[in-house]
Length: 165
Image 1 (spheres, rainbow, N blue to C red):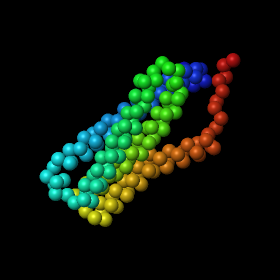
Image 2 (tube, helix red, strand yellow):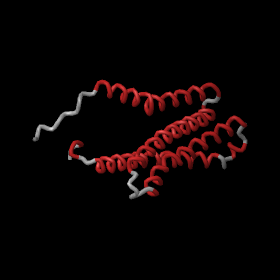
Image 3 (cartoon, rainbow, N blue to C red):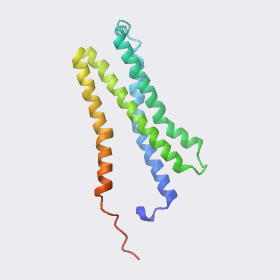
Image 4 (cartoon, rainbow, N blue to C red):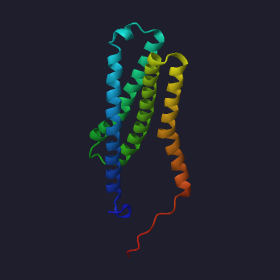
């Protein structure tokens, strides 16, 4: 079935299914990261860490917690509002939650890289690697896609109309 033949409800159902599938990928990553971050707090090396490391770790855990909440919220919204005729609203909210969750996940991964960088490199080397990680996430997850969206809206050809009459 082409997009032109798809009803509004079919389109919404497809959009929601695609969004929930995308979130499954991100949820697995954030859950693994969250478990890793939780385990760090129970090591001997962590007990001996300074305030900077412990603060960085805690902030990173908070970002991972926020990412977990934001990336799993769309499934809850769908379940609670199931068959309430609010699919379009669910998709709008879920999209905002997903983007916010991905931003928090990027921050949590960056914080984790900073923590590991402090152990391996220390000082400015750790900071440099963390900054490069943040730049990489920003480019790949936000800046380039948004640029493509804006440029695509201006340069995309009009949709091809079906020749069958």
